[in-house]
Image (cartoon, rainbow, N blue to C red; front, side, top):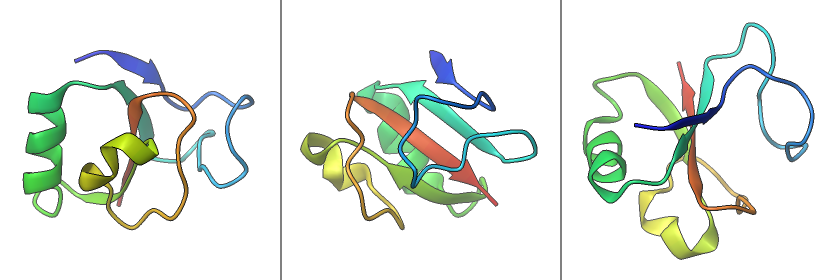
Length: 76
């Protein structure tokens, strides 16, 4: 698992929720991890998953495309 972003500010789309106090993490794309998070998201408290358009099968409650390939995961 490669964490590429967390609570930092700046450099993100206006639609993201990074920042202090928000339960958000950006993860380097890994198919096994993406499959696990998508399958078990409700059980582990995932509210939303945002991806690039090419990885839209892993998306949950997200209506925009990430610019670089990664999983933007928002937790409850």
